[in-house]
Image (cartoon, rainbow, N blue to C red; front, side, top):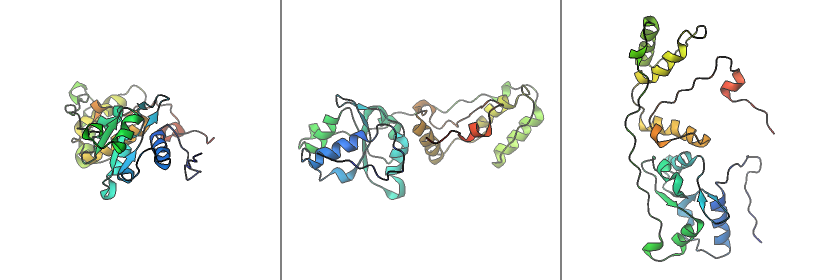
Length: 226
């Protein structure tokens, strides 16, 4: 009988991304697969009852962590998450479709049984934002937004509902320069953790338009601990 300890105990564990590393740990401890190369990899993936690897949230954030502070670990994860994780240019991504494929990778002696390093998919064209040219009037506000974009300043728009605040704010991102790779990775990593990231939105500045009646708790993330 094998015991799996997910420490620290006070840190909440969610999703099934631990399924693959737990399964590999049990197989290695029981001598069913060799363990000599396991330390060279990071693992994440949810397992179905048939052993199929299902997609997980946060693949990009985990891929980024494997390269932080000079890290050099390869990353084995579900095939469905490979394109997302490969956005980290230096990351070594090895996707798999099942637990059996991962076991073959470590147990096999022939090249045919080894997982192949994933090549990053072609990225989408430059993002398209709503155009300021569509806004009629509002000359002073548009000028203020242009100055804020040029000087890297924050902006606060105040006015009654229907005065055009959201319309102008949604076009503000189009005035800003293209996101750097580092900025894009940071923004995409947060979206990846929530499951909201899409490859076609790469380097597109996120915009949120909460309703004007939203409470402070709703804006920053409210809720009660269970």
